[in-house]
Image 1 (tube, rainbow, N blue to C red):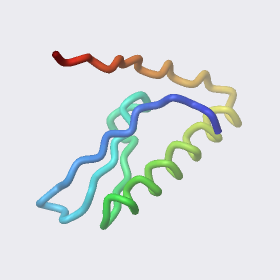
Image 2: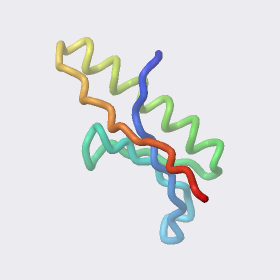
Image 3: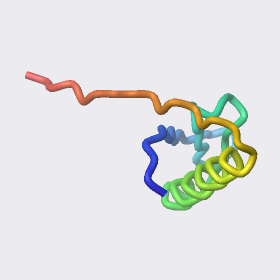
Length: 73
Protein backbone atom coordinates (compact mmCIF):
# COMPACT_ATOMS: atom_id res chain seq x y z
CA UNK A 1 0.00 0.00 0.00
CA UNK A 2 1.48 3.30 -1.05
CA UNK A 3 -0.58 6.12 0.38
CA UNK A 4 0.33 9.28 2.20
CA UNK A 5 -2.05 9.62 5.11
CA UNK A 6 -1.36 11.16 8.51
CA UNK A 7 -0.96 9.08 11.63
CA UNK A 8 -0.89 11.00 14.93
CA UNK A 9 0.40 9.14 17.98
CA UNK A 10 -0.06 10.56 21.48
CA UNK A 11 0.45 9.17 24.94
CA UNK A 12 -2.72 8.97 27.06
CA UNK A 13 -2.02 8.95 30.77
CA UNK A 14 -5.67 8.11 31.46
CA UNK A 15 -5.54 5.04 29.20
CA UNK A 16 -1.88 4.24 29.91
CA UNK A 17 -1.48 3.62 26.17
CA UNK A 18 -0.39 5.32 22.97
CA UNK A 19 -3.48 6.50 21.09
CA UNK A 20 -3.32 6.58 17.29
CA UNK A 21 -5.54 8.88 15.24
CA UNK A 22 -5.95 8.76 11.45
CA UNK A 23 -7.30 12.30 10.95
CA UNK A 24 -8.16 12.12 7.25
CA UNK A 25 -10.63 9.34 8.04
CA UNK A 26 -12.56 11.25 10.69
CA UNK A 27 -12.78 11.51 14.46
CA UNK A 28 -13.56 7.83 15.04
CA UNK A 29 -10.56 6.44 13.12
CA UNK A 30 -8.48 5.56 16.18
CA UNK A 31 -6.57 2.65 17.59
CA UNK A 32 -3.95 2.19 20.30
CA UNK A 33 -0.90 0.29 21.50
CA UNK A 34 0.81 -0.40 24.80
CA UNK A 35 4.15 0.67 23.32
CA UNK A 36 4.98 3.21 20.63
CA UNK A 37 5.96 0.37 18.30
CA UNK A 38 2.66 -1.43 18.95
CA UNK A 39 0.80 1.82 18.24
CA UNK A 40 2.62 2.26 14.92
CA UNK A 41 1.81 -1.33 13.93
CA UNK A 42 -1.86 -0.93 14.96
CA UNK A 43 -2.07 2.37 13.07
CA UNK A 44 -0.69 0.82 9.90
CA UNK A 45 -3.11 -2.10 10.18
CA UNK A 46 -6.07 0.24 10.76
CA UNK A 47 -5.05 2.39 7.80
CA UNK A 48 -4.73 -0.64 5.52
CA UNK A 49 -8.15 -1.86 6.65
CA UNK A 50 -9.76 1.53 6.05
CA UNK A 51 -8.28 1.83 2.56
CA UNK A 52 -9.38 -1.72 1.68
CA UNK A 53 -12.90 -1.05 2.98
CA UNK A 54 -13.23 2.23 1.07
CA UNK A 55 -12.01 0.57 -2.12
CA UNK A 56 -14.28 -2.48 -1.71
CA UNK A 57 -17.28 -0.21 -1.13
CA UNK A 58 -16.38 2.04 -4.06
CA UNK A 59 -16.13 5.00 -1.69
CA UNK A 60 -13.64 7.68 -2.73
CA UNK A 61 -10.65 7.84 -0.43
CA UNK A 62 -10.17 11.10 1.46
CA UNK A 63 -7.52 13.46 0.18
CA UNK A 64 -4.30 13.23 2.21
CA UNK A 65 -3.45 16.39 4.14
CA UNK A 66 -0.36 18.03 2.70
CA UNK A 67 2.30 19.15 5.16
CA UNK A 68 5.69 20.64 4.52
CA UNK A 69 8.77 20.61 6.66
CA UNK A 70 9.59 24.07 7.93
CA UNK A 71 13.25 25.00 7.77
CA UNK A 72 14.55 26.60 10.92
CA UNK A 73 17.33 29.14 11.00
